[in-house]
Length: 306
Length: 99
Image (tube, rainbow over all chains, first blue to last red; front, side, top):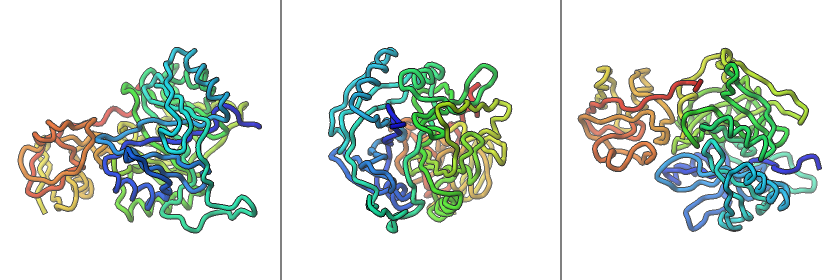
């Protein structure tokens, strides 16, 4: 098995102000599928091509933002090993009982140095992607809106930036794929636990524990343009794109959910292997690093979080 | 249509009761209130309503407390005019890159 340890972003739990509006956004407009609800009023969603029961949990709240992001690890032994790694790094962990989220096994919970809550788990109920495992069809015919394929990554803003990146590399064994540097100062770090361009990314900030965006994969540039059409048709607050990022090469568009949590849908980004070199953007090219065509920063894109 | 006046800059624009005060500003290419998520979550469009009536939608308590909301301190993206409105700007965008 080539992939071990932490496999992928398993889910993100987002706080939402209005569940009905949020479900319209995530299900009707973006194309996620509802898989469950619980007695706390949380609604569980998955993207169509994911096998596990959920990758997004919407939590009713009087505020916006990310409650936590969770990564799936390969085995129960990995869960114990990473729990030990986190403790050895000097960060406290707690255990969340199996079933606290419907269909999810026991979770190891901790707060990373930049102020975000993360969890690791080894087990989640698999419901399949709606396609037969024998002679499988290439896609489903019952999808809506943008037809997002999978929950891909989050980009987060936080303080204690250097310690946080060290934590992800050393304790969680992530690989740095790409960065923005200003002289000796790293201001953005893109990190992967797989062969993706990023499974998580961080931007240096004075604020602790903020969400910049939760991102979802599309299949092509054409689908990014279709997403842009849907954003206008449905009067979704649009921010930037369709365009290309310098960082990761992804073709992308940004918009906001009805609680002000930023979403990205993107396609056709790059990939890494464990022996790939780290790619570096310098601060005097930051405009191009972020928006490759316009080469200009967008004020809200840099300054707005939830 | 109602008249919205940004007290700080004397910028004026028309806004219907079906659009929030920030969307009204933005669609006419007017400026004055910082534009962020436009969904009540980021807080950059925080304003104090000095005069006028409005309907409002839920806004994140990270940015507007219940006490503030009762005093007319609100997010411009969550209020819909029901009369002419005069407001002053409280919110601001953080600087682009922290360096």
